[in-house]
Length: 340
Ligand SMILES: NC(=O)c1ccc[n+]([C@@H]2O[C@H](COP(=O)([O-])OP(=O)(O)OC[C@H]3O[C@@H](n4cnc5c(N)ncnc54)[C@H](OP(=O)(O)O)[C@@H]3O)[C@@H](O)[C@H]2O)c1
Figure 1: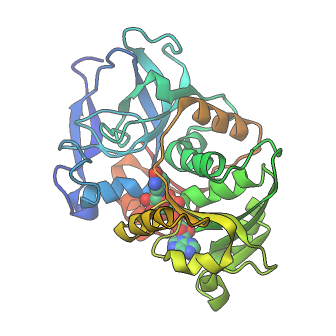
Figure 2 (figure 1 turned 180 degrees about the vertical axis):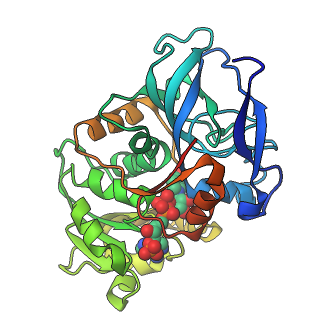
């Protein structure tokens, strides 16, 4: 593919929203050692993609402009999206697990991004096979959102997804969103009682994902985050933003913890204060650490029909701005997909 050009969407400065995205023709990337080149079939957007563009993660990310977004695995110079599903078309030196023609899903490092493009380069260790039962669109929802939900539940909330382990009472906020809709489904594979929050239009949808109780976040009861049946939460998977720890505290079990997906400066202060005072109730900021074996596990669950990717909307790469605007709007139900 060396020397060939491809269509990609990138931005070259902070800010600008959809107007900052540019459609460009750039060279198809070449896979280096332990990398594979993918023909992208679908990419999914995550809020981190536009947050990086806004400069909310500066000076760490983006590490370089121009940046191609996207949650498939790609590389610098392309779009910064990190989640992709596609077909292997070339392998770099040392790649053992994959060959041309293999269908896969991959998590692209946010330092390189590259999902909003026709081709993307992924690290072998963050690429996993995609069986024929799992479509590219279903698979590409999994890397950031699915792995974050998995990490929050298994590592931080202590839920065992095989159903063993003690019963946990959970609250999952923004259960209709990318992370939340996976979190509810995964939580219900374990021994859990799930209270979930979402908007009125999604109450039935979230109940259908398996939540035991659902609260409309715009009602007084929803804002109070109180379980209708009086459950005290062992853990809160807090996917929504802007709620202070004090709002959760009365509803936590004596050793309950709030797992904060979008920690603010104030959250870090609260977290430190809870540690210093040896509080049994905790606030734990979460930073997703993607692992290939966990992505593989999620793909298998989708294959077995135990986990679904709900697709909010699909957009062609030529109209990536529409997908970007939809994500920035913050009202997606499930995942926003871009198809080249
Ligand atoms: N720390 C990490 O490593 C990590 C990893 C992944 C994601 N995140 C962060 O986690 C957050 C969630 O990500 P996401 O992909 O799930 O977002 P998303 O898909 O954009 O979430 C959208 C959904 O959230 C619902 N929502 C918004 N405010 C709500 C509230 N106060 N209560 C209940 N529901 C609410 C919306 O419902 P309505 O339309 O009805 O308002 C919508 O369905 C983002 O801030 C993201 O950056 C962090």
